[in-house]
Length: 485
Ligand code: DUC
Ligand code: ZN
Ligand code: ZN
Image (cartoon, rainbow, N blue to C red; front, top):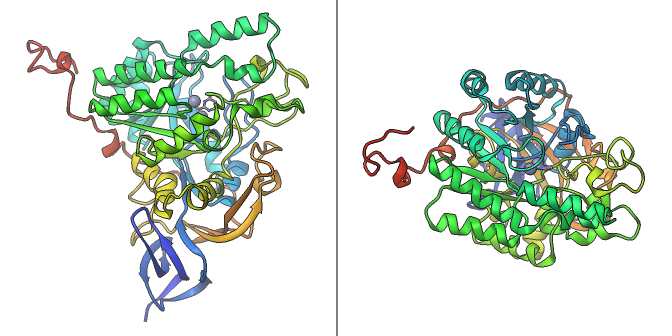
């Protein structure tokens, strides 16, 4: 009888398609067998537990500066340790090109830092803040060759791209089979409102939400889709926060556009009331797009159920609740002086498990799909990540569905010093987490070495392939023979 390296025995294994009782056997870091009475050099008793694929967080910021230059409160070690504590074993943070700088140098810099610190496996999205021709022509192809397969662009902030540059990125992405992720908000509306609000003395955190109008998000979603559609480039719309943006996504899908969209844990669990707290800590809930209203929360849940939204990420963007982060401009800063973002890597899975499976009536399989399998598929990591099947990496979260936990920052262990989810009670918790068969977290203790996480080189894959349905103007058969791509 074969003795495997590790056997996780007797748990209920869940995938995006199914659940069943089985032992999971690991050899050389991969799932080698699913069955009964399997023998292992190390045996982990999972009786009464769920055995879930480790989470895949397709959008988080690690060791990155805010739009205004404030450094995240987390390095790769603390961020990925907090991800692992919450059952996430794959992350996709960013390599951010500063305007005017080299994309290749930015990527090399993030690679070096991730290689030193990461505890879980990772890929990187490349942020293109300055897609000048030599960056797209000379710097991008070797990065694609090295295994980068997704880009992020912004339509707001100082690093925003105008429509022409966005189109240039979409066309380059199409040439190289890359997914493009978009931060879609209308910059002019935000700038105009910020100026007026501050001039009229409305600098309190609650006006951050006022300064990011919901139809400005919808407008930018619409525009990004229209531009990408011209060159038949699939998009991922990041951090969808409101009903109006969902309507744009549904309309485009109904018209046959190939499009993915995510929302984030905080848009599903919090509202803009957090910005108007009477203890003066509203800055700690400032993120962009902003937290919206209760009816948006409900609309986002419906969009998860009907398939409009494909994935849920953390958008972990931690800034410490002190003068190095949220309060760099003083203890009562104007919202315009507060870096945008919330910590969330650690609690994404516990919050979503509790909300989806216990309170909202989604199936356990839906939870696995939205938090692991589908992000793995969209970012073309699914040959190794996001499911429990023979040949996949043995990334497993052994989950106690009965454990009740009151969320507190100490459980997250990230660098932010606070959690926006403080005091929320959840049921369901990862008691042991394996990455490639190695236990990386046991009862909240991180046991893996910094730098033991690996880079995951990948291609764009099927999700990034064009739909094959060009608009008439780009179709040589219908545009008098002009070949434009
Ligand atoms: N966009 C993000 O994707 N994350 C944090 C802040 C932001 O604007
Ligand atoms: Zn963004
Ligand atoms: Zn983000």
